[in-house]
Image (cartoon, rainbow, N blue to C red; front, side, top):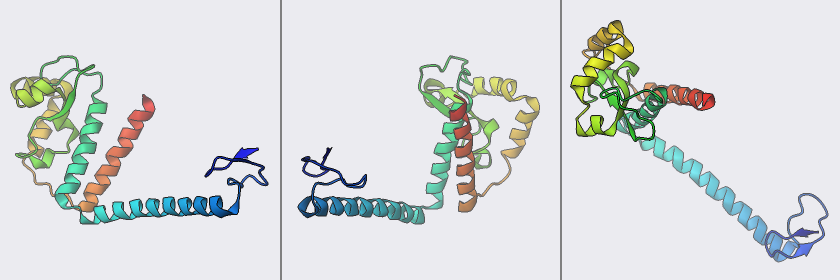
Length: 181
């Protein structure tokens, strides 16, 4: 015996696909529900595509920034705050840029320019740059630090396809971290 998906009455199944007790009204209601679910799923897919079509360059950069910051926080998990050396375990964490996003957009998505920081250093102390500048060369090495200083003066203008490519790149890196945890 099985229970009807609509009226919950018990009935005898004739096949594995048999899920309702009768054609009318339970069968009609069941098919109507399936059709509605399918319509909703199609609408969700169409809505997602429409939203992507109207996204601006700035919207895409913001999406990339979120994915990039998430990756940085995963990469630096277990390391202390870049600015004050406090433990970040069980604390809210920010992805802190050494050279700010506004003044140095060319290194906005440079992994050497961004490290996990405590909220106090990143937000309240505006990055705590005096301490950040001491600890950053120790973490990434002097050569990479000097290279980062050179890169900040370059220009970088990402196109939307390049931004999408970077989003996928960092999503893949995030998956690798999630698999290793």
